[in-house]
Image (cartoon, rainbow over the protein chains, first blue to last red):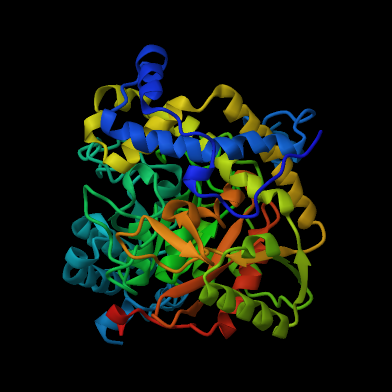
Length: 84
Length: 471
């Protein structure tokens, strides 16, 4: 898997992916999630999500194809003691 | 000893005196209650002090000890709980308006264990609303005052716990840690904070922020005290299936063992973008540890930078799932910062969440591999000392960063991997603000961290230093 370039330092918000539109979030919130999004919060939510999407995409650099999710964190000690 | 000085005894010292019947639990409890009465309006550490029930419990403990029934090192010791740990018959607000009148009908597992060990509950401690924020700011109950600087953040989310311990308002406290919420206020308030291994301490009866990242841990003035509190809290609980059936060792005895010959890996990837005074203090601590006969080497964890986005996806999705009913019906009652962060969770995709949980496996294996060659990792607890209360960003080595991201940068990866982590004060900046180091160990090997922390504490440049309010 080809590695994507990764910046040594976090970029300013304006240099990251194009910002998410607060109006798009409002539509998703009303029509899909059905959880009211206060219009006053929409800008902050859009900024927070925009700031994380690059990082979430870059998780692909970890070569996750053979990895199962840790949906329940079971530590080795639990296996040894019969709880797995 | 004058009553005000009793509030500065370490938990271990107080316990030893109580065991020898040289100190009365009632006298000790009264000293704390007097200090709380005098200082809490300014400190804002307690949301609900419990003077009457604390004195009654102290009186009962004293009588029990006088009859020769000494329960152990926590018997008669006044402690306090972060106010999202459920307490039977005592309101548990979670630092929120939504639950301001909620009175649980059962104790959380940790509350019951500490009560059964004879600890005295002084009250319930302030926090960032629903534990969702590292600054410790609380719009509903006021922000706890950092005793090292009134204009500085106390750190969160266990802000009341950090302030209460640092300001001599209890002998020890419990906090919870989902992205650093024990270690960050411990670092900013100059005290010891321990995030145990995931599963070492029961989460039953503690309101969740994110089930798979939440940990409960002790916050104390010394490492030995953290060992004693952990010993009173740890162990399997059938009500929390993530707690394995493992024996609970004598952590105090482990803490007091000679650490010579242990190997420490300096985790260099956590030393990027540090405040210069934080860097100097942690490097100085590494030198001091070497002087104690420990072997130091450099460790690289280049992929650990991926922990931040993974933690974001997991906290956002899990907290949203828990809070969804309140967000649908009582959204206006949240503080705006927490409501906004919770709302972001509805836009995290299921694929993001699962990718984060897969990344978690990889990063946990990376840390496990590093700990295969050394006994513990050394890193800073926070990249910066306590930021100003109104700060939304900090600039470190010329790079601007959101204050929330900066405060959690060195702590949140260890929530993802579930390893135990101990924060120990290691210096003061020229402005008089505490700086702390962080030690990370193998799963269920809190004993080695306590051993290292205890040895370091003996040579720490800020050993026994009190904040200005305690001098």
